[in-house]
Length: 345
Image (cartoon, rainbow, N blue to C red):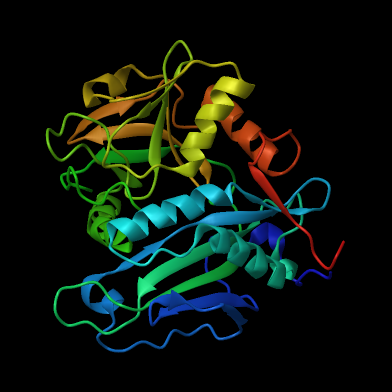
């Protein structure tokens, strides 16, 4: 298989069209067989459920070229389960979990020439999407849905290294108790855009959202979970019913305990505790861990001992270990890696 002629080491984190994408439609009470297409466009009725009432959810995962030259994807079963959970909460027809994984594999195989080579620092980003495609005008769920998977090669989230971010405590609420914060609904991200742009306008990289009920507990940012390191090297992550269960965060907690021998704890984290942590990071598919150097609470600044110049030592070990697992450098826990065979090889 011949790779595309791209400058792999200098790719940005942007959309780039690849050859094929997967499409399946739910019509007349059943999902069709699905197919691959070169068509990047979606044609919808003007009254489609996704346009009228934001019936849409999505996932994000990556395909890698491992150290031994294989193409692999990381824990797609968890993405399949999370998309099903999202669909059920939005009263959408879930796409079958076994078919979800098959569709991911089929799409990656069809775009294998776009999977960046090992050592380039780039990956093939995979975006499954589910949305209401049937027409509705009264407030009700759509009766028709479309499931799509497209891919795009992306570079590392950070150019020139992961420099610590500066956050601000947001005046906005990301999600309400018993709301939709725990699912990957498009509407959650739409609601966070104004808060993000406001933070950026004021010179910050991202927001720290507190819980909407009491505004005393750490939740997450607009698109990532928090992970904290205590001064005695315990790994702590916030527990809440209104934050998204990040696959990266769950994997990092296993890595911390099973690979690095660290104590881990998932619990409610009071904002007043944040000043006492040694390291802080944001975790997600894009960058695995993005270090945080400073948090601004309406003019009152919290600096982490790990500093503003580089990633803290425990965060760095977590990053290196998890990416080592993903790239085949380190042995993976059973079921974490799905290898994709190309052309019978």
